[in-house]
Amino acid sequence: MFQTRIHGRGGQGVVTAAELLSVAAFLEGRHAQAFPSFGSERMGAPVMSFCRIDDKEIRLREPVQKPDALIIQDPTLLHSVDVFGGLNPNGYILINSRRRFDELGIAEFVAGFPAHHVCDLGATELAMKHVGRPLPNAALLGGFAAISGQLHMDSVAQAIMQKFPGPVGEANVAAAREAYDIAANS
Image (cartoon, rainbow, N blue to C red):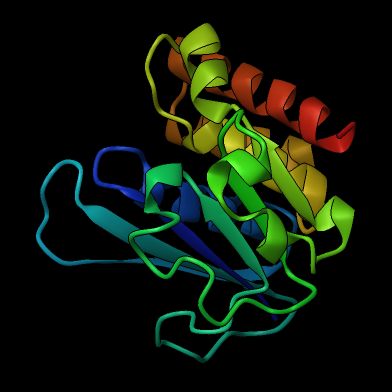
């Protein structure tokens, strides 16, 4: 079973990101579950969502305590929430930031992971470029597909189009594809 935890703030599409990951997995014939965890439901409050992917039925129902991958949609959470708690030592880390890891204050921590398992990606900038709004979730899913190898980019694109048909979906797919290319080549 591959478990992903997504950290962000209310209004950034954290819950939608987990949902899209699970739909992409279903499209590939796999089992998946996605669910959120949040306290006060206000814009800007820290939010987590979870996605599990497996080749067999998933019976677990509790929050992901030991993730295989982290997607961090808001880098301001790095030092205010324990985003790295329980992370598999060979896990994947995808951070929505164009700042270097030393600038983020996590260089020493991420140095312990395989280099191709850690990626900083300016997903908000890609969202602004393609979608016109600072919603990094779709771009980050493209980056996730590239670094983790858990999903194909075409499945991510199809999941996005199912959720957001028309021009909004097309713009989000463009952001996700560009993020995929950046992450795959970094």
